[in-house]
Length: 577
Image 1 (cartoon, helix red, strand yellow):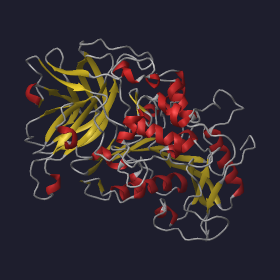
Image 2: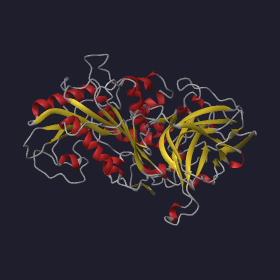
Image 3: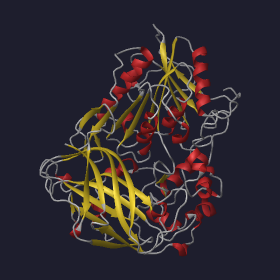
Image 4: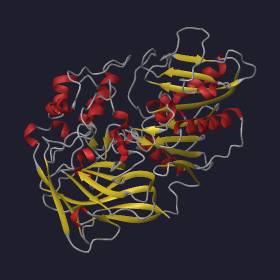
């Protein structure tokens, strides 16, 4: 690199090079050498190789440890913002990408002078920032499952609510040893009670981390959306599309669902060359790259969606790096769940969608008609008995037997009968209903506390009897769901205590979907106030910093959901006829 730091880099070149080939680069904190032999040798690429279909026709694949991780020199800082734009002498992941490509062009024989960059999750973010102020040889990028904002909607927070289990386990693994990844040693397999007995978040440093995990210390020092989080968001430093960019995301991504959707929209604002493209599929985190993608959990997808995507990915890089094909790419490739069909769009979200509101109403009913009578329903939220976010056991995130990847398509009947989970369901649909675009919830609620979490789900309820697939009878599929921490209702930067008993409106973005609710199914709105241990327990008492909570701060609260002409709890659905 330009500052003298050396980065461990693995180069895989075709043995028989009859022509010159382009580079496809992936930069990673997770080990560039993983599953690859050491030293200079010839070996056969197997079909489990993620780019197997591209390897067959000739690419030079490059895998690199980022600075400070595994075999590379230097110091690592998680998601370090780009600084070279304001300090020409600084180094960051963009300059490291530039220097890497420049070195490859001049030192690896038989290359055609063109490079692409790709990555999933953290490597997806590296592909995104690597395309900022790119090397002239960098012709195309595909950020996949890239985070967009670590406070508003990816990885560590969602709408200000802290993602406890993932934040705890991921930051420890990545930072306890800068050179290698090490899993936290839990004393039990089922972590639900372990996290419950942990108590206040202040015990993490007191008992386990002892201030050794820099990112956890950032959580503690920056409990609100201050300048630290704002400057660390790529929404603030990735302002335009400079090279062709293929954003890729999954509707059921358990880690970075928000990122591709937000980055596509953000970069589309300044895209004079129309380089910005989007793929959204029915996948968990990275599923599109490694599996057939014919199902997720118990949900059948009707085709090999992963193979479909990998063919598109090959077409993308073949055109920009080899000049193969006509270069005609649709603006958006969006899988429609329910009907299990791929759809293409000239703009996303589609402009032809019409907003129709699904209202909560009396007797736990949901209808497309605005309530004409006033009503409400209440439940008690107890921090000592939080609602689990999936069925127990709660295994270590990436530990043995973990079901973390598919939890978002888990049958929601496991909480349907809890008294602290409230549901509103429609009558049976008499025709198909297609919802395509951004879904937004408008929750009118009050609490007897001074803070509260609100989890809202839009659920597809399957018919009571399915003779073709008995196990899917009555299945409750959460098409989309999200959490919102109440004290941030007016500002994520300046939280305010809730006023006990006062009904307030909470506008909660439920992301973008493309789903057909089929004839014979029902729609359900579901609301709860805990989602543990994925989301930390809200004390339900306003605190400036939740990481400093005392055990006495955790109190029961009565939550009330309203439905009336004045306080009309609803979910706005973009419906396509």
